[in-house]
Each structure stands twice: as structure tokens, then as C-alpha cells.
Image 1 (cartoon, rainbow, N blue to C red):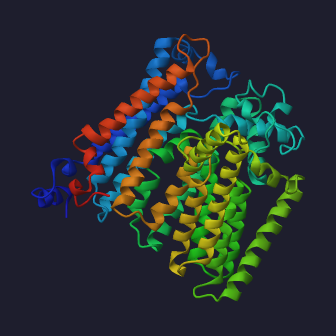
Image 2: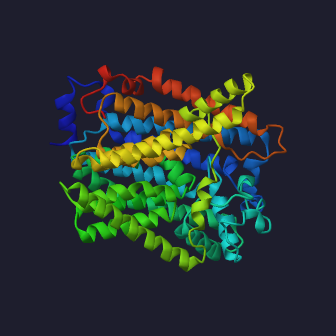
Length: 509
């Protein structure tokens, strides 16, 4: 049936906003992405020694109050417009039709392309990667020597937070950092684009294996791609910010698919090895190993068989990690670096807020509030890890990946510090195992909207000698994002229906 015929067939029952072509949505989403790109040239992160700062067009955007305010507004409006069009796309396609795949693919490609050119937004971790690579290349042990061990680490853009802190990354990512430094030389500008290429590799892995895993779970792969790959949070943190989490998650998704597709020795060994590489990027990927062992053990495996395969899984991964440690000469020093972010919390993390309130209570009673806060943080983290462990033991075989998803969610949600990109870890797993069109979608949409508003106002690179200070810049971005977010939820005649189940069209979500 042609597109026009399908529209005529459903016109009596469906509102006009559903009938319109997705082309307009793809175009307007691309405009939002282009606005973020342009805005990044004025407020995106650049190293103090960046040669890009010397370009006339960059100077005109970064060193006058009016231009900086304009870039803040453009970035905020672009980010929220992209969020709106992502929601609109779900209203305009029918997941059961082949055309949906074409439109979602067009959206993903066209929305991603401008962000590949943008300066880093909302995070400057990419410059810390560069500094850690310089430490590695200098012959020092990055797990013992902070980035302050090399000259001009601040001038190269690294956050002072990392001056004495070991990187919470594994040997594979250290090799990647070293390779990037060798290619980029002394240029942090070249380095951040190379690191974006590394994160894009993770995005490609997700794009390849996410639809396959979705089909395996009986989930529409196009809908899964919309939920994940076209998601503005995903694009912001895994493309614009160039977080190495993209590579870790891409490897995890690939490992899970291989292990679930071929539940034999070949699939098990391949899944373990790919997971081990993910661990050697960021060690949080360790959480996947017990579930890889379950997939390898096979359907209906007895408890003795499961324990044997768990031991084999852990042993093989340990040997592979040991070999990597021998190769780079640092052994298992990365284990000690896992506490780098310990003690950090944020107000929207339930455990973080609880710990803060306990500290206030303890201080008011003359008790050691700081110690009580640390105890709350540790208990929350332990419960999260314990919950993930229990899920490896409890549940049906066909729910193994869903159990992994919930276990990873517990670890993230019970951490006192929930970075926005931690939440993005969860999106591919929920997308492939299924998000129901009820309160699950409500929560997912609200979470996306909240973290997009937060990202817009979280980290901006505002020249410190302007009359407009950083806090004022963040306030402007936050107000613009909040107003646009409220418009999306309560005023926009199309998107407000997304948040009201009784008004959703039959084709939505």
C-alpha cells in the first residue's frame, strides 16, 4: 500500500499531526543538530592552547558577550528542538511498515552528521583522555602518575580534577589514548576529533548489533533504533561529548549478541573475549560476565553446570586481562583506580541525596556526618552490585539479557553519582529487551527530557574574562531549556499527546 493510500485509510480515525510526512521532522531535527554544531563553536570545549581559538570566526563567537549568549541560546534551542523532533518521529511512522526503517535511518544519519563536526559539548573528558595518553607515552604509569606529571596539562584542556587522579580505564583504552597522542602529536584539536572517531566506532557496533538483539527478543528493530540511536541523549553523550562509554557499550552489546546467538563453545569464548575488551576500556563492563557465562552454559543448564561455566568465564577473562597487563607493563594496577570517582555525589541521584540528608542530620546531632554519608554511599553501591549478582541467579533463561539490563540499572541508580552518560548505558539494553507503551515509555520520555535539559546547562566553556560569567551562562541555558521542555510537555499540540496515553495514536511508541 502506498504512503498516500495509507494516510487516506487512517485519516478518519487519526489526528492530523499523525498523518503528516516524517520528512519535516527529519529536516527540523537536522536543523536542531546544526544549531548545536554552530553553538558549540562559541561555547564548546577547546583547550587553552587550541589553534582553533586563533581563527577569526571562532574569536568572533567566543570573546564577546553578545555572541556567547547567542551561542548558548542556539545550543539550548537546538538540543531541545532535536528532542522534540525525536518524539515527533514516533508519531509519524508506523513501526510495522518498511518505510519506518528508512525514516528512522535517515533521522539517525542526518542528526548525527553535524555533531561529528561540532566542538566537544557538555563534557571535557576527551581532553583528559589526551592528557592520560601523554602520560602513557612519556613512559610513566598513568595509574600512579596523574596528568599533572606531564607539562601543560591544563593548557591541553584537561580538568584539574584529574591532576592527581588515576584514570578509571583499562589497558585497551590506554593503548587507544597512546595511539591518538602519537597521531595527534601536540594538537588537542586533532585529538578530540580522533577520540570522537573512537566513540563513533562504539556507535557503529551498537547500530549493527542492536537490531539483531531486538529481533531475538521479538522487539521491532526499527523502534529499538529510534529509542536508542536517534535518542538525543545518546547523540549528545556518545557523539558530541565523545565519551569512551560508547565503545564500552558497543562492545558489550556485541558480546551479548554473539553469546546469545551461538550458545556453544565458540560463541561463549568469543563473547568472553569481546566482554574482556570492553572491561579493558571501562571495568564496569565486568557486570556482563556472569550473564555471558549463563548464555554459554546453555538453556536449562543445571546449577553445577552453571557454576562450572561461571568459573571458566571468570578464569578466561582473568587470563586475558593478565596478558594485557603484561603487555603494557602495568599488570592489574587499573583495579586500584576504580575508586577514582568515590565520594562524589549529585542531587538527583537517590542515594546521593539520601547521603547528603543523613550528613545534615548527623552534623545537627554532633555525629560524624561525613562518615555517615560515606556509609550510605557504600551501602547503596553494595546493594546495587548485590542486586545485579542476585539477578544472575534468579530468573528464566529467556530473560537473561533482561535480567542483565535490570542489574545494570540497579548499579547505576544506586550509585551516589549518576552522570547523564551512565543513564545512556541503559538505553540500548532496554531498547532491545522491550519498553512497553505504558508507564515505561512515560518514564523513558521524561528521563530523556530531564537529562537533555540538564546537559544543556551542565558544562559550558565560557571565556572567564567576559562580563558574562559561567554561572550566568548556565542560568541562561537552563532557563531556555526548561521553557522549551515545558512547551514540549504542556503546550505543543503534538508532543503533549506523547505524555498522555489516552491521546496517543495507534501508531505511536
